[in-house]
Amino acid sequence: MSMRISIQKLIKNLGPGLLFASTAIGTSHLVLSTKAGAQYGWIMVFPILLANIFKYPFFEFGVRYTVTTNKTLIEGYLNRGRAYLIFYAIITLFSTFTILAALYVVTSGLLINLFQLNNTSVSVVAGGLFVLICVLLIVGRYRFLEISLKYVISILFLALLVTTILVIANGKVPEVENFEAPAIFNEVGILFLIGLMGWMPTAVEASSWISLWSIEKFKNSKQKPTLKEALEEFKFGYFTTAILAIFFMIIGWFTLYGTNTELSNSAVVFADQLVQLFTTNIGSWAYILIAIAAFATMFSTCITAHDALSRVSVDILSLLFPKREVIKNKGFAIGVLLLAVINFIVISAFSANMGILVAIATFVSFVMAPIIGYMNLKNVMSHEIPETDRPNRNLQILTYSGIIFLTLFSIYYCWMLFI
Image (cartoon, rainbow, N blue to C red):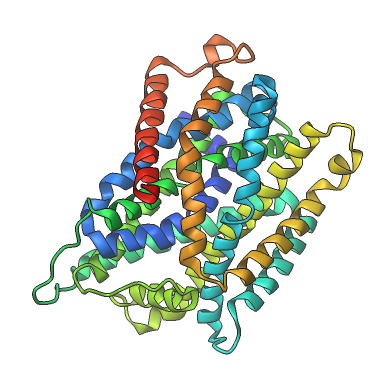
């Protein structure tokens, strides 16, 4: 009986953790996890798991701080000092020129592939997606996201589970003659490894996104969840993303590793390769189903990231310029539209080259991750949080371990790029 009540509470509280899962299952999973398995094989399970383990506290603190204080993480940064907020504002400003653009490029490629729009450019399709998502976000707001994504994530998880089982049951594709496994610890391998971990499960700055969604959840709910309930909901979403990352990696490993197939940086070509990859072991009859599922995955990631970055931008500006009433009243709608325009320009300027956009976004996310992780730790260890609600000793040790681990990798990353 108590188990049933616990499950019912979890389903009722689903929201921020679910939106986090939707955000994470985008480029880091569909693109990078699949490429990891395809290029380097089963060994990639270790960096995927390490990234999820070491980054866990950074994201969890977004829920812990907000549920306990009724404030966003971004407000917490201001409370720690104005320099914290300005630093995070700079990171967010840079992210708006890269993360959304990269997501929309991949999604546009999948849409072109799905409807065979071969004579249509990626930038034109991205423009149409920007218009559609702007309307959905401005009209539907948070409630629309929460309801729609419950179905999308559930269907996606089941579809990927079945696909993974079928791929494993059919066995791994044979390796080509004289195949040599690519080296991981050379310049190319290390850069890919850092890129994978930089966006696995997603960028650390997204911890504030969960915080803002939690605030919206409280506004739309009659009863605020306890800290324990909120953390259970977040863990459900977080561990779901980790499992799905392994699924994508396995599919890439079983269907492409050892075939010397090179995955394209062109959004349209990669989209077709990706869908073909999923249908190899299932049959051509599944092509349209997989194409729709892949597009739905990236579309949901686009809409959640667009929503989150708009909310973050409004929150930052309202704290930096508290007397500007227009930011509070119409800020979200303006933010949604402004982000669409900015990222459409970025996509057009980069000629829809997915590789460059992802590389830029990954660099910023990875290098700044330990700093943002430390800022989040400062928030949850502050006087605003009662001692009983602060992270326990084990979680603090994991947090410092994650900060050290990511710092060392970031230093090595910069050394390889600039020395």
